[in-house]
Length: 107
Image (tube, rainbow, N blue to C red; front, side):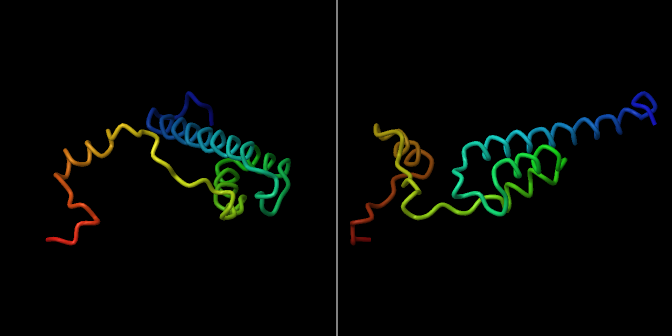
């Protein structure tokens, strides 16, 4: 069956699946390059690269789901606010109203 023989809705589905596959593949390859060797599970880096590239849509999903071990506690950076000017606090106050002070025991 040729591309021109497909009806337009089938072409759209094929193009959407291709876009999803390329997106997953790109995300998985970026994550693979940023993952330290000691956190890779089951396969070495080159093995995961082959699974991601040749595994169609399933390969990247398998890597993202099972290809990496969780970071150890000391390796994880604590989340810190990126803005110290109080913009986030002001935005929350505008959206939700003034919140009681957590240290205030009065109600």
